[in-house]
Image (cartoon, rainbow, N blue to C red; front, side, top):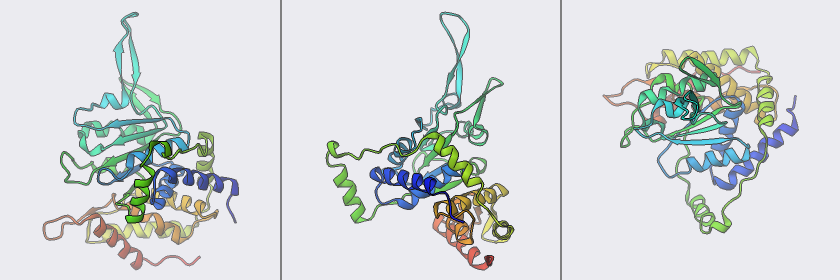
Length: 317
């Protein structure tokens, strides 16, 4: 069965608008769109200067999302994120001031440069779509999406995100360096402010909500669910990992596989959909075992996940 053509056209139009500002990163754009449709949050791990913030701003414009950005330096406090009470000089009463998370798209820039306490302030917001301050719970706008960036571990001033925080991100993506032709195109597009790309609105918040509902209705067979469960079980028994993929990771893999099917115009999931998203969903959820005293790189972790894919037979549908 084919998927709704109108929704597919919305997705393609949105991707084309974002490509005006972000050159040569089509796969990353598609996967971020998929994550938004799956109701998840995105972690971009990369070196500074490759366009992570430009990507977030382009998404906010194309998807008509209210957008806030916070630079997560060492002096950022949890109250800056969630909100706080302060006295009103006229009335003498305490009033709540909303934190930076009260928006549709929250860019947490360089999230691994701040304290663990401030990082953890995002946990409830990411999981429940709400924040609790002084025993009062307040709902965040719907949709609420966190697009966090972090510099590679070991960069000056960085500290690792705790596993509980990493597990809240549906995917971890990397933009990487552009190739020579792409970098030349970036230089040309930035040569004059008069010719700067103008990202136009391609969909509304109601469209995003409709897409999320449509993605939930994508059919997943019992064989595919069993396949995802067998992949997760393989990571838990593999000696290259001290900690395998969590059940939340399997749930995220199934949700992203549905969105992969939707982007390909299908109303059902096939094994290739799982393969397309599994590395991005699970590479940050496993804890690798040390090899000769060192931790494996991200590419080595993804290679190990690739080996598991080859060893675990896919169902024949």
